[in-house]
Image 1 (cartoon, helix red, strand yellow):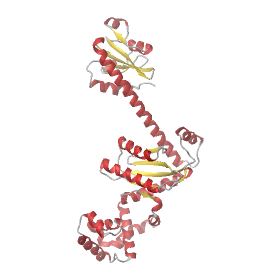
Image 2 (cartoon, helix red, strand yellow; image 1 turned 135 degrees about the horizontal axis):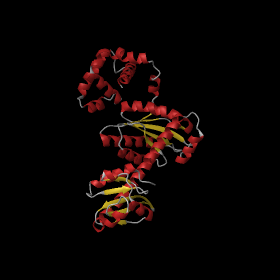
Image 3 (cartoon, one colour; image 1 turned 90 degrees about the vertical axis):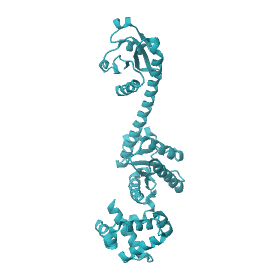
Image 4 (tube, one colour; image 1 turned 60 degrees about the vertical axis):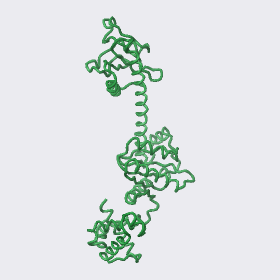
Length: 369
């Protein structure tokens, strides 16, 4: 393991906030990578080279300044990763005075490096999982390289899998970590919980033999609820069907369909439940564009009335729930529904008319998304 110059510069920037004297970080070849004094960057430091080779603190005296190349009076301390020296931390000043600071800064540096290394490993694994997932969805046949990656990642290609897409907003690392923790508490064997663009998360769910759909639904509701609590915006979730690993593309396309409907319904949607939606997708674009105008006519210009109809259908034609959700009196709701009947010539006591309004509203909303 080596300390990269960019990380060394970040460490020096943090040290500047706490320590006023000159500080350097030197690589194991004796060249200064970062310094509070920019003029010293790139120069050779013989004292640091001795420190790295002998794995011990090296005190630099005024006399040493005359015989050792590139040094200043002070203290050099080796920075370790396990038992290996990966860099040298140098401070100027009287050794007895600066040693406590030096030990503290070295320890801080070692912890900072360790944390950065773990973060880098995690990010590398995330990128590898994302790359592997893209290959999984695009390859028509699994190549030897793909199978080798699967073995390296510990992916069981013999299991049945289900893809789930969650969309909300630009996720923070904290939110990703929290949602991963929530998910893995229920399904610890799932490896793929990864960013899928700025606003989406993709879950490659390894389906247990006796999967309980209600359990999966409750988990998705919890995930969406967490997102709402964290950012005051409800996330949407679409789930494809469980398929063989070789047919994962099918599940992905289904998850996208479920997500498109979930964005409207504000609740997780399983593609297998979209029986009506699947039929409606077969209707031509021209009919989709024309049908809302033919059904609603002038009513389309009344935004309040159209929102009332959306809420009414969302609550399965319940007058009570619709009125409560819209914070209006139930008589006001009845007036608006009567107005809709008057403008459209359709009635809410006829099944055919109800279906006509629902489909027209469905196409109208699709055109605005």
